[in-house]
Length: 396
Image (cartoon, rainbow, N blue to C red; front, top):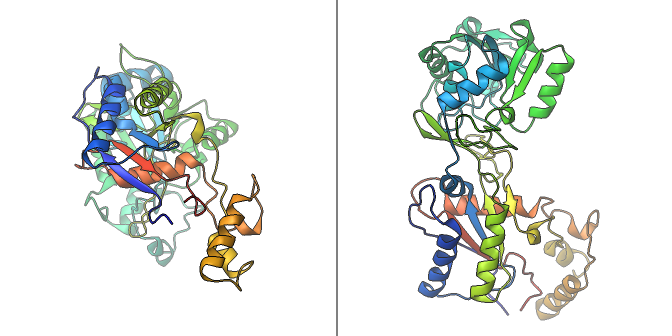
């Protein structure tokens, strides 16, 4: 009987720059790792490449001047509502500088007590202690300070309200701050709006247009075409971007389907195995301490080979052991469960024996594993090799 199931290995690469041949570097690094450890390759192994190194090799960057020009052209450059941004120096601060540089005034509307991905302005309990109704109350900056005072983020030590205000002023724009959780609250101040929420952006845009807004953009509508030869992303615009320098951002990668298919073909030629390949960004999980939901990218995996389509089709082993085979034990129990797995239906949706298994896209599950494996700091492993993910207890 096999003793090891799923394994995930972080694979080190050199520090790559714009124009480097990423496919060759990935294949060489994975093959070198197999010699150093050593390990063998199998059909349906998965090689995952972080979106950051893909975008870097593509040179997919934009400056705050590029963003400012795009914003000014698309909004008219006067008073613009910027609503529901996340609280992040890495993810949003540089975008805000670019937006502010392209307009005369920003009405900055922040959700409270937390942003979309869970960063807290204030503690949830305090809202009710202070008699505030977050579902209906719209707070001015003055009212917010009067009730809640000055607060810093639990992990970063930053007062994001003051930080964003100062960034806007630094770019030469006026700023007015309000706090609200319903999008149409901004329409009292302006009918030109940039909706910065990530996963609810389309609903927000439609609501504002239905309520009479003149122009509504999401971050996907900005930098979705090149400006002065800049990078761009036709599908996600500024979503998925990260700070590169104090004056520029690295955008989410584009047109990388060819990359994953090329890596797959090269690995097939080198190993004789059909290996799946994907590009991954943020995983999709929540931190229980800070209540922060990790997924600030628009999707976990923007590009992947076709073998990664779909959701898992798995049986819950403990359900089988406690119910159908509760009278068996030892080798007889193991054999019965293996037979059950070998003869399981192709679609277990709605079946009691699959209850409790994770009904998520395979790429989301793999991407979360990869994000936790590679981290976002100094590990230097922008490629992750996953083996045994598609194996079951019945595979010996």
